[in-house]
Image (cartoon, rainbow, N blue to C red; front, top):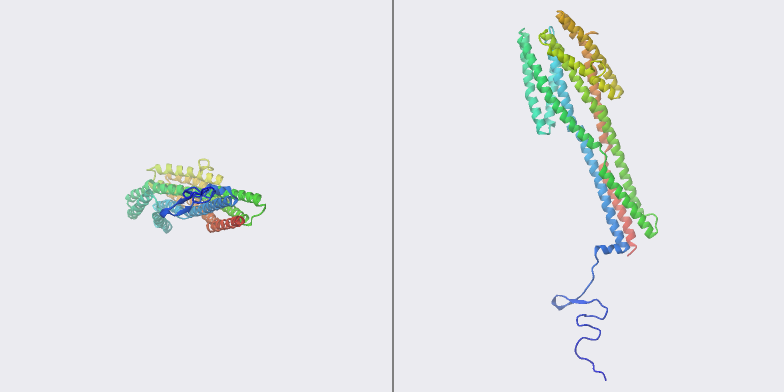
Length: 465
């Protein structure tokens, strides 16, 4: 007879096992209670089974779609802001600087002409001077509103202080001139020197800085959307890969959810590329047919006005100052060159092919050539002692006279400037229209693609539960 042990653990049980052989070991918790051990799975363990791999794939696809959609929306928003800046603050700054430059030159040329014998009582010259001052005052106001940098603010403040100083010198000169005192001519020269040597250089600096900012904004708005396009292609490739893997695993060729997500992403990519191409094309056209010719033509207009002022100051000096004549020759050379075919006007004519613009440039070149010939006659009359005839030839409006040639040149340049400004405004507005609703559209398509991908994945994952 075999003795049965009365102490110790039952057979097959270890003192610490707490269960039959093969069962998971038990551990004591607080208060002496036993708890069952449950092994935990690491995140990498999900990849060992199909549902886990699908879940990981779903997360990656959703993240890629989110990044692609967010980058497309961000790119569209940034591009729209840059276009708004080009047509808004920076555009207004550039136009105001051009207007200021031209207005000062126009006013100076008009008031100088009024000091020629018999011209002080003419209302058209007085009106032209006052109109130029009015435009300059309006331009200063715009510049003050649109100036952003500290340097620009300081330059606008200098112009604001110099403009009343200039008009004060002019009024003093007119007062002495009405009394027949030669001191009026001295004040006129001081006024003209203030414009040429101080106000116009400052205005030109403002013009250059605003044009640089405008170019930066335009280039940024026309740049290719590399980040958004790259993320979109990555998301598209990811969608294609998971659909291939699912089709291979489940023997189902088409997943409607993932197919819809792919279609939405393709539409978003194509829309982004088309809108970018359209906006970039309009911005390029606005630069080629608007900004660039406008810069050259505005400078040509200013050179013409300064040459007109030089012509009058040479006559007023009556041979005592040859600097104005030398400056006149220099300004005409800037316009059409010594050969009559080059210069700034020849440059514009060769570089830009806009038909309407070219017609006015051709008219300007012809008028400048006629003016040079008429000015030669003016100088011959003045140098030979025929002062009154020289003045009449300078201000006359009949064919062959300098006054008529200048009027034709000024009219052609004004029309060409207006056309270039219109091209810039029209093309920039069209560039902004090309991006209309893109931000909202890209958001809707990205969210739709994510929802479709989620639906397509969850249906396949649920089949394994």
